[in-house]
Length: 483
Ligand code: ADP
Ligand code: G6P
Image 1: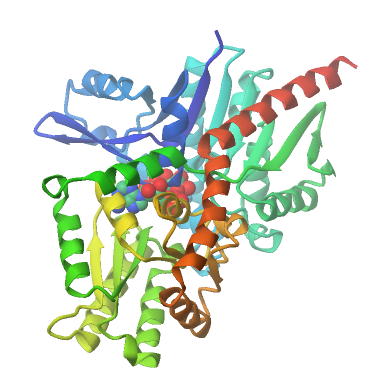
Image 2 (image 1 turned 180 degrees about the vertical axis):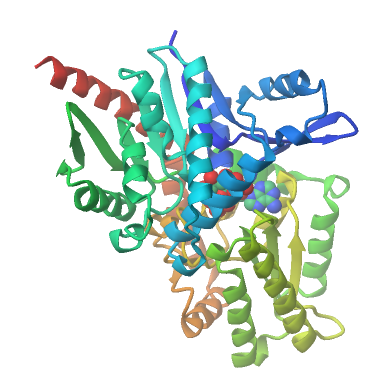
């Protein structure tokens, strides 16, 4: 029987070793949380990196690592510290990530990390080739593995390969600055189907293929030798039921079952019943616009002093890629901004910002989603942004307001939220006023529409649409070749 092989840098869990004891924690990020729902429901094998370098694995413990991953239907690609430095911290996160998010000034073009990226992509391809049968479906994910489709195709010309990019694909004018732009496109073209979150990313990719490789593109089909490669957009959804069920259960919790965080939130709500809680949850990443959001909050408080003691911003920033200098600098900037704003505006009974720099268990995420009146998400660029969708899914009584950056992929499907330009403080400030004062009926009307859409286009539908399209493409290609 054929199986699906999912391949991504991150596995659904990350392993840690303490005193030869192995523990697994859920991976954070849209790719892992989304694909986890797909993986747990079907017959698939997930290949990726465990989060540990070879040097971090004590002698004799490798078989235990394999066992720990097998419990999650996963199998590892081993990476040395030097490989992780060049491939993950290097080319993936110092070249592609900033470039594809339009932070051109942060992108480093280093030949050495490009070479390591190629070698590590080959390692991932070899891991697939070792496990894959000819009729298996191979689904490669994200910017860390853009050369893998072609590497697998070379060895197995007939196998079905899908590729999905979870981040934006930038415009040709940005993409063309990459020294290895042609190799990256050729790597991707090993797939039968290439998927993006939005129509714009799809168009940008096709335009780069046309202009850099001079290939024939008809509508969204690319013709390469005797192959036809399809390119399409598939906006990723969330596991809607998981979030809405968790929120329903949360509301049924008795006092003793509540988390410490929830008790603290409840206490503040009781003491200041008219105060509004604003929430933002992101990985600590410059693409998420956290520093700008803090400055916008300061602007709002200065412009609208009547809201002092009436609003509180909860910022949950999850540590991410902390070996990359830009992330370290951003952490410092955020620490300073939070300190400055709290220092400037706090009163004896009110601290304007609660700042958490950590990952939180799922239950606490639900505490925050369900307790906060406004979700405020202002990425400068974001492939999708699932947090926006998760917030709406947890609003069981349909109240709550979402303020969302129009630069997030999810903004295309969330027109009923308050869409803002993250660089425009005046517009943001007005959106905050509108959100704070929005009548309950209007909130419910907006969220009712959003919820229906998110429930329908959930992550399962996303995965099914992608798979169906991949199988159809393979079928068409067979017919095309037999003609
Ligand atoms: P990105 O993929 O860039 O990190 P998304 O908003 O698309 O951004 O996805 C983030 C995912 O990570 C969401 O599914 C969210 O639930 C999850 N997540 C965010 N913060 C935490 C946290 N503190 N603990 C656990 N999961 C988190
Ligand atoms: C984004 C990327 C994923 C990545 C995630 C977390 O969602 O698209 O590929 O896994 O961020 O980042 P990390 O570097 O921790 O894997």
